[in-house]
Image (cartoon, rainbow, N blue to C red; front, side, top):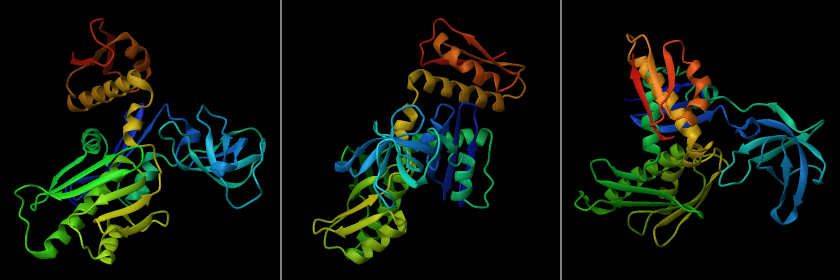
Length: 342
């Protein structure tokens, strides 16, 4: 793959949007049927203030949806008070047990409720890659599976120079380590080091975007004694010039710090949402759809699974059409299934 490619996997139960640039996955956007609409990025709602926390410089908001509550930071406008109605927009989706972060749009009226859903996956793809019609079907399913696998990796070796990039998230921050693998061609002088750091920043930014991470980022650069201005310019090229990104200086120990805004639920949390039965249901539905698209000659293709999964999967399998079937396999564990043509 080369250039810019866009894929849309609209399997029943879960939709995935994938953006690939120069053969490397840049974005994996996932939305599911069980998502709370009021919690989606960009959703607008009327909410009711239920708890004001001056120490946290914000208030908890009932959005008329399942918990957790939203959190509205203090900003322009009248002071917040318990019982007050406000119109809000989601600026960051839930993560780590925390509710969505909200932005105040103005006064609200009526009971807490959803006013407008956030952008769909297809609309997000259109904003990320204007003018590119997404590829659907079998190729999109495969791209989504490969993007998920890539996003769950910590990094690895990159390029002919043997650049080793490792990106890991802790409770406090995202730690990025850039290094040259043992035996890699080191080149001469600081120029080779600067090129490696530049490529490492680009790769780190790509992985963080793919994982939908935000927060404090600490990047351990290769070597010390860097040109701080040049490193910051390379970082802005890699991570972007979003007004909400805060760039810090390069320390004398060769560490660059920056703060990225949270936007979406982290990928690893997104994939765990709904519990193991729901995850198995989505995996089964996608596998069956993939089989249907790959094998167009078999009259029927049947998924055999545990009864718990079958109960949840039945309406999704029905949406795949008359060739798709579902049977209960008493010997299957909840997380396992079998796809058989007939």
